[in-house]
Each structure stands twice: as C-alpha cells, then as structure tokens.
Amino acid sequence: MKEFENTIVSNTSIEKVLPSEPLNGDRNPGIPALAEFRTETSSDRRIPFSGFLTNNLLAGLPGPDFARLLPHLEPVSLFAGREVYGLGDFATHAYFPETAVITHLYLLADGSTTSAAIIGRDGMIGLSAILESSPQSYATQIAITGDALRIELEALKEEFARGRALQQILLSYTSCRLAQLSQKAVCNGPHKLDERLCTWLLMVHDRADQDRLPLTHELMAHHLGARRAGITDTCNSLRRDGIIHYRRGVIRILNRGLLEAAACECYPAFRQISQHIIAPQVTRYVEKFRIVS
Image (cartoon, rainbow, N blue to C red; front, side):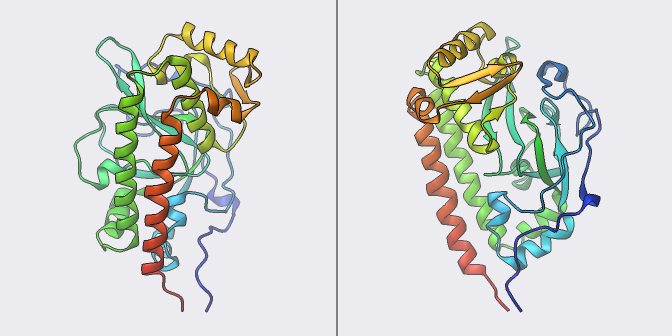
C-alpha cells in the first residue's frame, strides 16, 4: 500500500455557506458592528473547497494521524467581517484556515480596537480551548474572505490527548504564537504607523497568497489601533511611491520588495519565528511518527 496522501477529494457536496449571524452566538456589544468591516457584497456566495490541503499544521501530519481527523473535518466558507468567536465566548470548534485570514481583535477601554495575531494557513483558531484556557478575552474576526476546515473541539482534543504528532505540532505552534505576540507587543511601542501598516499588509499578504487584498482603510485602522486618517495618509504615500494601488476597498501590492523595505524590523522577525519554530518541529515529528504500510 502506498503512503496516505494529505488531500481531500474535491466534491460539490462539501461546499458550505455560513449564515448571516455570527458563528458562535450573539455579537458582544463592545465590539464594533460587523457591518463596519464588511467587504463582500454577496453574503451567500459559495467558496468551493479546492480539494488540496494547504494548511501547514494539518499538512504536517503523518498520513495515519491525518486519516483519524479526516472524517471530522468540515470545509466552510468564511466571509470578511464576520466573527468566528466573540469576546468572552467559549470555543466549540477549531478552524484551520486554508485561504481565509483571521485575526484576534482586542477591545480597549476607550472603545478602540487593535489586533494581536494574524492567522492564515500557517495556523489555527481554537488553540486556547485545546489548552483548556479561560473564555476568550478578544474577538476572533475574519479579515480576508476564504475557506477553512472546521472540526469539533472534542474530536480534536481526543487526537491531541494521544500524545502523537498532532500534540507536538500544536505545542510547537503554541510556542510560535507566544513569540509572535511578544514581538507584536514590541512592535506597537516604538515603531511608526507607516512601518506597522507595511508589516501588517505583508503578514496578511503572506497568508492570503494573493496580490489583491480586499481591505478598507477603516478595517485597517481598527486592526492597527489607529485613526482612519492616518491609514489614508500612509496608503496615499505608498501609492505615490508605486508600492501599492488601492481602489474601492481593494489594495493591490505592486512591489513587494519596496513594501518590505518600508516595513519595520518586526516583519523579518515574524517570518523568522514561523520558519524556525514551526517548520523544523513539524518535519522532525512527521519523520518520527510517519508510518508507511
């Protein structure tokens, strides 16, 4: 028998459409209204699952380990501006983004917001529930429309408790997330808004894997804890320099090299964290637990 391949057969029956309500109960009134973040005009547009597994964590699992999770994985479409979980919610499902980009959005005392983590195909949503932590102190919102694989937490926790590859990969990812949060705390202090915006755009671009990013100035202001006017001024400057182009809520990256040059020193640090914490650990544990019949 040949080794199990980490792919899911494409089938129209696995296309999913999310309801118009938040994914996990009522929205917390302290979080800005979802309508403020909407970038999709059609709430019922289907996003067909491609059938190829691109999430780094799931793709790093040995075949037999992934096969145990496969019956529990449900492809879902995630739309920009929706909440996966609200402030104070208990998670019921974990999400492994494929093409969607999701952020953790914190509400400050003055009513402003700022994001502390950007998660795409490099990670997962629901990590705190796996580690049995308290209810969320942040809202989990979708920044870029796309698809993901959803799984009930009990099924994921059962596989985690086996102590095999999934546990080691998620623990490695936890280490990575903690390092990213520490770097983000450093970034929010001394670095200027234009540098932080460039870093944020690069991190979203890495996870969305497309040059056209459906992002409004208002959404970026919320995620960077900045005034919308400041975001507009920075975008105008980047457009004049030929780095980006934006029109009608869509930013298109024209010159990634110049965008990286304009970013703060945290962007290469973020990339190094991901490359040197997740990747080597995944490779090591995959080799350790790989079973070929």
